[in-house]
Length: 238
Image 1: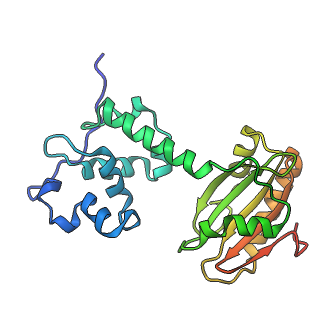
Image 2: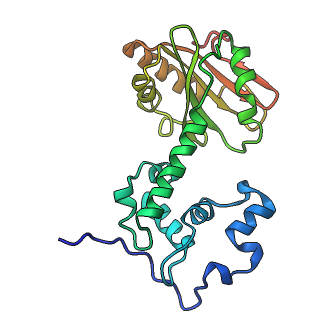
Image 3: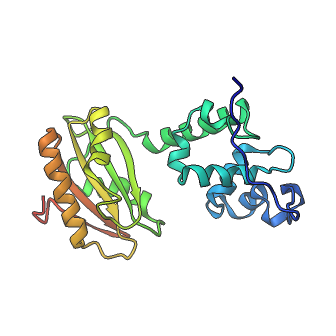
C-alpha cells in the first residue's frame, strides 16, 4: 500500500517563489537585517525547511504545519515519519526539523547541576534575565533534587495564567519523569506589578494540593516583574 501524502494548499495565480519576493521580506534577509526575533514562526520554519517543491514554497510548508498542528510545541513532538508525509518534506527536511527542535529543547533545559536554589532571591537572580524582554506572561516550573540543585527548567505555558493554560498535570508530568524531589513555580508580570492576582493564588493552591498528593512539594511561586519580585512563600501563600 502506498503511503499517503499530505497536501499543501494550492498556491494562487499570483503566488511567487521566495527568491522573487522583495529582498527585505525574504526570511533569511529579514533575519540578517532585524534579528531572529523579528521573524514569525512560519518564517523561522521556512528557513529551516530551506526550499519547497514545485510551486510550493518553504513558507507554504511552514504555514501548513502550523495550520495542522496549531503550535510550534505540537510540531516539535512530531516524528520524522509524520513530517515526511507532507508533500515537499522528504527525509532530509523532516530530519532537519526534528534535529532543530531537539536542539531548542536542550538549550532551554540545560542548567548547571551544581547551581543551588536556597532562597527566593537565588531564584530571582538566576532567572530574571530570561523574563527581561518578554511582553507576555510565561509560566515555568523549576525542577530540584533533594539538595535543591537545579535539574531542569520547563516552560509550561505562554499567556495570562488561568486553569486552562496551567493544569497540575502539566506541571508535575516533567517532575515525575525527571524525577524531581520538589519544584518551584515561576512566571512574570510584564506590567511591572509583582503582586499576585486572584487567579495566580487559586492556581498555585491547586498545584500545591496536587503536589501533596504526589509527594512532590512546591517550595515557592516566584512572580518576576522587571526589577522586583514576589515570593508566595515569603507572603505565607504557600
